[in-house]
Amino acid sequence: MRIGMSSSCFYPEETEVSLRRVGEAGAETAEIFFNSPSELHGDLLRELCAIKAQYGMDVVSVHPFMSFAEGFWLFSEYERRFRDSLDFYPRFFEAAEALGAHLFVLHGAKHLKIEPERYAERLFLLNERAKPFGVQVAHENVVYYVGEDPAFMRQMQKQLGRDFAMVLDLKQACRAGVDPFAFIEAVGDGIVHVHISDSDADHDCLPPGKGTFPFPRLFRALEGAGYGGKYIIELYRHNFTDERDLSEAQAFLRRTLGED
Image (cartoon, rainbow, N blue to C red; front, side, top):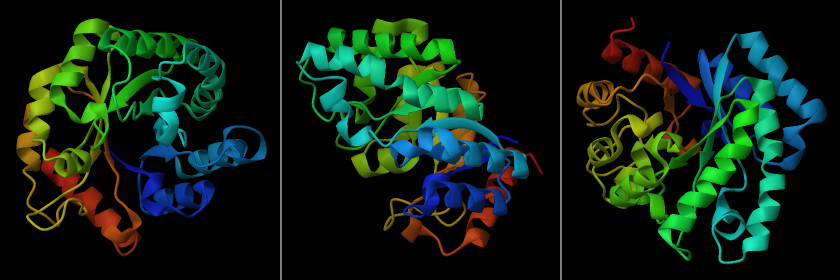
């Protein structure tokens, strides 16, 4: 199945509780949003692995709790801090490897304080640290961050070539006032992961099937660009009532994709 769900849907419940609820909602594919350093090792990581096994879920991606600070850690003018960060981030890559995840979701910087070429170089070096763990760093299009702009993503792709990877998030594009199809046109098969949600004229984030977003067109456009990845339902907790809403959203997307 290509439809999955993020544990972040249930934030601020503890990550292991959230992942169990993802399993209870019938998701066969999951993204794990880490919320604290203790979840990256030891008993809590083993519990996450056990929950994954219990529900037979395929964990394809992880999301770090460091997103708010990535501009400070990775993309500032202070070179030493970036070099030190290359020794810090493998904690996330090790946890991803333990869970079988192959994607690491990056928000990037809010403001471009270094040259685009240096930004791309740092993405490359971070991705080089991830590769031994079987993990790819993928930059998300987050509103108020540099990645909200399709032209910026295209520039990174030109710099990095096959080492570039993007996460397309529909609600973030909506909040930024950017047509998500513009990212498909800009980077094509550089999109490796999709955070999926619905929207309408009054709401920028709804469960799939509750709004007016043209999902058939999205699926055709992505597959025409060579996309073969997963579609991960990622909502905020106030956007739905309970697991039944999420189960219905999965069923709607599977029908639309022709998986049922």
